[in-house]
Image (cartoon, rainbow, N blue to C red; front, side, top):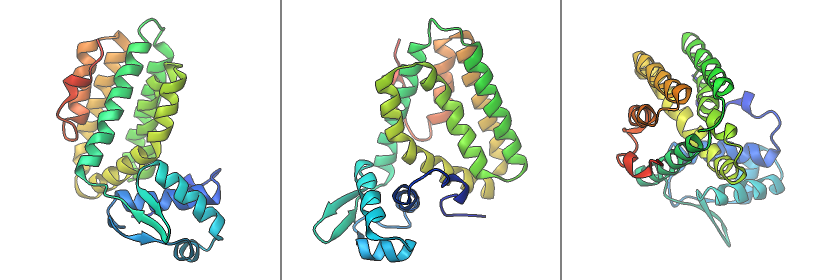
Length: 226
């Protein structure tokens, strides 16, 4: 099973974005440990690129708060359980806020989009395709965020999305390898999300958040927007 950044996701990326994507995945997965010093020359040689894309990659990773630029290179910062929890905290806040913004919309199109991605997630499981599952899972949750048509919400989401994508990909690869039966539970949880959006039911959405995120965030109630 492929463990690096999916090559099929690199289309449309600049060289710097591609280098950042692979390094980001390695840092999030713990393959590159906190405190490691990355140099432009070292990374340029590793990826067979010039130093310019590496500088671009370092800027992106610094924005992600995964590295700190220093005189001799880039120092990898801690990305452990606390950092993951904080990231999921923000994700919960964004998704609950997006939900509050679709209150007066016809949710038919949103629900259709979510159902489409859920069906594609099920297909991905049949073919042991963690990469496709991840893409459709992200797009599933992104449906309400995009439908909110809230400029700054979309901006915050776009900043978080690359790291969220890495976390989900790592998690889905592990589940597919070790606990494929768990995807039945995951599919059910997503059905609850759809039910919440379809009926604009706050109580059901809170239930969906608990089903999906209790393992990474224990303070879901504190993020809920009435």
